[in-house]
Length: 384
Image (tube, rainbow, N blue to C red; front, side):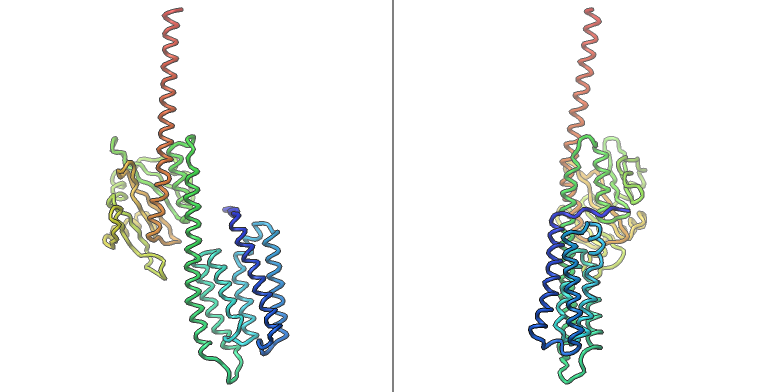
């Protein structure tokens, strides 16, 4: 079981702002219907009571955001946007149905879900909000000659379209923050005491964890000795990549079958709602995209038992020395992931160079010290 990551100062501020805005919306709604009681036109007392309860609930969440522990807040925040949807569905059912002024509260719940938990969570809240608003709104709408059919039809469409856009941009921002955090994290690997093998193994595990992947592996070729080596990490053994193991030539040739100047994205499932291509190759030098070679990628995925994979070439001193693979069964890859992996290795390459330089200097210093001791012993024997 993984421990919850500690919240950053920025995340804490965002939580305070969200809790404060929820309280402002609830209190404003209560004040508005008190000043102008034109809506709701029915169940007035019950609506006032329910809105007062929502205001009290919002005040409680704001107090918890200021004083509660991070573990308790993490548990609450997983469900709070769903609770907001339930509050607004109840308010709509008690007021004017699809014409209710509380319709706009759904956008707040969608924003919270999207910018806190990402695209999928925001999309789920959007779809549920559309379904509940349409069904509950139509069933509870007042039966009168003033029923506004145009509003009843337009509002669900607006909610779906704008909700999708909020979910997409919320997920995009969250993904960018995670990528920046990963790039910042890999720069902390520059500890010469770890050595090159431990540094590369740690990097592979960071990448696997970032994508929630099943496996991350690096295949390298030692041209001088004509040997292939494999570093592999998975969920069960995250430290296995710190020790390279020899790889038979026929297996290495399968994993290195992709041209050295190409990156490959393969998703077993087809493109859905803009979540990335099914298959794509990207030429590293020209940047051209192609969809040729899907059969080869499918064979690689079958070899690695992966539903989705991404692979990029590993280069050292402008020469291809191997290839990196990340596989997953729970997510999809897109073109931006290729750029991220290349950026990660651009950050790590100087670190590896520095570690190798320190190792050479340490070895050279040790050799010089051994020679000095040998000369001293030789002189002491000749001249007692």
